[in-house]
Image (cartoon, rainbow, N blue to C red; front, side, top):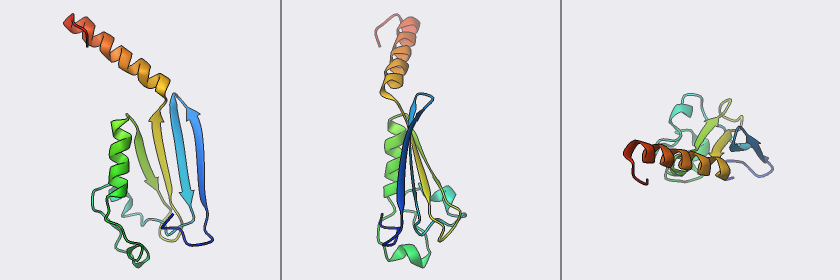
Length: 118
C-alpha cells in the first residue's frame, strides 16, 4: 500500500489451482524497473528511483515474504511493466490437504527405506 498513491487501486484475487492456493495482488503504484525485478527479493535491496526512497523501508520485506513462502513449500514472484505502471505479486502455497498428503508420502518412503518410523 505504501507504494500506491492516494486514489490508486490495489486488487487481490484468490483462487485454487492444481492443489495450490494462488493469491495475486496487483496495484497501480510506482511499479518496478525491469532491471530491478530479478533482485527485488534479495535482502536489503531497494530501488534507487526517487519514487521509492521517500516511502522508507529497509529492504527486508520481500526477502522475508519469500523465505516464509518457501518454508511453507510455496513461492512468491513479482512482475511489473516498469516504473509508473504498477506491480503484481503472486503467492502460491500448497493447500493443507496437499501438504498433509505430501508429508505422509515422505514419511512412508522414509519408513520403507530405513525400516523405522520417520
